[in-house]
Structures are given as C-alpha cells and as structure tokens.
Length: 108
Image (cartoon, rainbow, N blue to C red; front, side, top):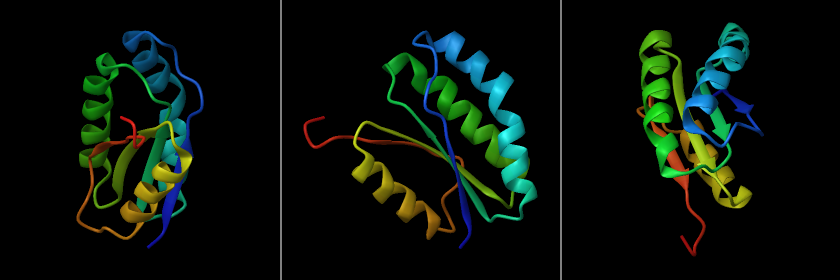
C-alpha cells in the first residue's frame, strides 16, 4: 500500500497553540499528499503532554472522515525505532484509520 508520511518536527508546548499551528500550517501538506494518489497518510508529531491528546484525536478522526477512503492516522513517539514500527504496521493495515497512536518507549 502507498502511505505518505508527513513529519512535523516542531509544535508549541501549549496544546491550544499547537492545535492552532497545526490547523494553520499542515492542511496544505495533507492535501498535497492526498493529491498524489496515496492510499494512506501518516502524520508524525513530536511527543507532548497529555493535554494534547484530545485535539490530536479529534483532528485525526475528522480528517479521516473527510478524506475517506484515504486512511489518515497520527503517530507520536520519542523513540524513532518504535515510531517506524507503528508506521510500518499502519502502512499495511487497511482497516485502521482516524487513529492517534503513541509509540511509547519501553520505559514508558
């Protein structure tokens, strides 16, 4: 399956600021990826506090509904190896969309 990966390396620490920046800056990148004819898009965001989880779940769920049948998921993690494993799983999991997944480190 074809999966585009959108890597977002920096977001503000405050949840509302991060959500606002995501909405203002990332939708064009998402549209570009979908326009390339991919079957799935994985958005990779940096780890953040628990107060970010709600906006991340909501935006991922809503984007997946809006762009179906393209699958859209979001992955967060501090361990690149674990995040890459989640991305590989999502690439080949046609039934998973609209999910926000946290790739925890072993110590988490």
